[in-house]
Image 1 (cartoon, rainbow, N blue to C red):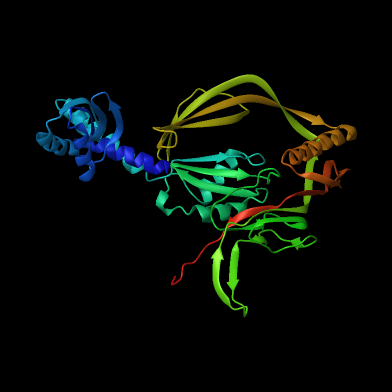
Image 2 (image 1 turned 30 degrees about the vertical axis):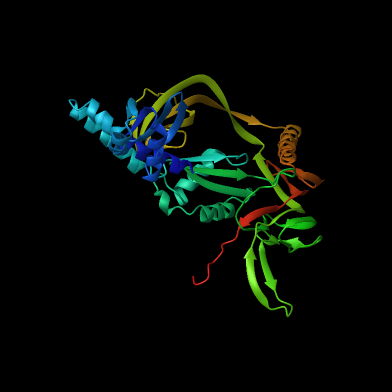
Length: 406
């Protein structure tokens, strides 16, 4: 819808529009004639003796023709759009041509993806997800008409095991990826398309609540990732159990199961630690389409962390252009050797484990058992084991409905 809105606005601007005031006894009749002759009227306002409205510039002559018979008063209040721009700057042809080329370029660029946005991530960083999407699925500058969002969602779900649900949409030139790393207990994921409820990870079923569709599993069943839990495929049979018709609905319900999380965390007893000196440097890159132009900088730091932030220019909220810049921030550090005592190593491993469990709880996961053991073997601190949890495991998965004859 948003993309269509942009395209309509661009089309109107290219054609030009006029805002007029129509007063007098024949103003109502003029509106009726416009409607009868398919003249598009926008921003209609009623005033004391008539109307104010906006029409396309190409329709203005038709309105004048109709008004020759009606004799109502027409006053031009405003002109806008490309034709008016050329008329206004007709003596500055080079400037006008440059503007026209810019408009044509924007129109062409609007058919491609120039930005990928990630919403809802926690375990994975935005940079990590975007890098994988650009490298393996949708590179920057990819044609929008070739993108299959349903296929991309399925491939990303298979790629990222810790992500429960992914939804992709295109707005303007922005590919937006919505992520749920767990299923909230109080607000199930909603979709209007025909779908099944499937398991997003291996589990043992403990509870099934079916609101719409047909339940496939029961309490105590062991399910694998992508198994159907509640189906949206409804088969209608006659009194002889012969299939008459198959319909598709949006399966709705809540499925809860017991899930085993395999926890593994290892770090060396002897390690190096970064000690930041406080010195920082910056550099900038110019990004044009898929080319990067490095702007020279005086960076003489020896050891540093590099943090990059990219800004892509846009006209509207989601209409991004293939032009932007990257700010690179370099933070200098020195390395120092450290060696943990067994008590310190155990304390660090335990804090990491508690932080991991706390993040699970924030996502609505109930902890049933914590069987993680912390040991020190060959100068390494190893925390490993199974965390048994209970959580919502059902997510919607669109049904690919095949039309007859295909």
